[in-house]
Length: 188
Ligand SMILES: [Cu+2]
Ligand SMILES: [Zn+2]
Image 1 (cartoon, rainbow, N blue to C red):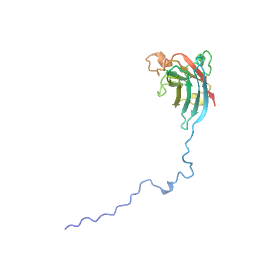
Image 2 (tube, helix red, strand yellow):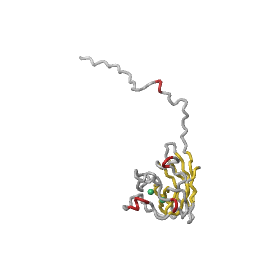
Image 3 (tube, protein in one colour):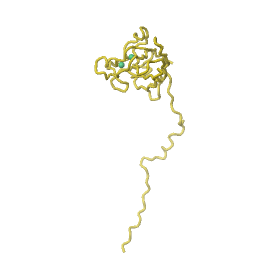
Image 4 (tube, rainbow, N blue to C red):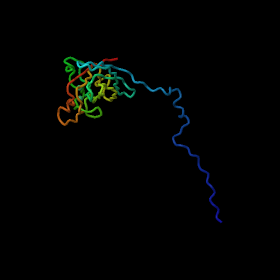
């Protein structure tokens, strides 16, 4: 009778890269304290047709900008929502100039690579005319060439077509129609 092979002793399994000296790297680092967003600016929306609200612009730990707030007394439905170039609200927001566009690009959606820095898409008012705004954007900043400080935030009468309207005007403005409310973005 042949003898079965005797069981071989197994070598101990040592994960590669394990270094006992490196297993306490979190000592002394405060745990469970998420970094907070920092409020940087506010804009108090006003309008000849009664649209109003306060927007807060904050900087997130990853460098993105978050815009939150509630706008009331809007016509229900979507409304183009942009940063315009100049902090000048005269002529019913007309003096605020065009969309903030430091790179001379075409108009687009906030998620497009080709967009104006000021292109923040649409806000949507419910049947009671209330829009709860919560937008996080990677492009607009609080300093440098993409700074929105002392520029204008503008709400339009109609929906922004996000540059998909198929004509030149869509690539310039999104054809969102009249400006119905605006505010200057002021450092908090
Ligand atoms: Cu606009
Ligand atoms: Zn635009």
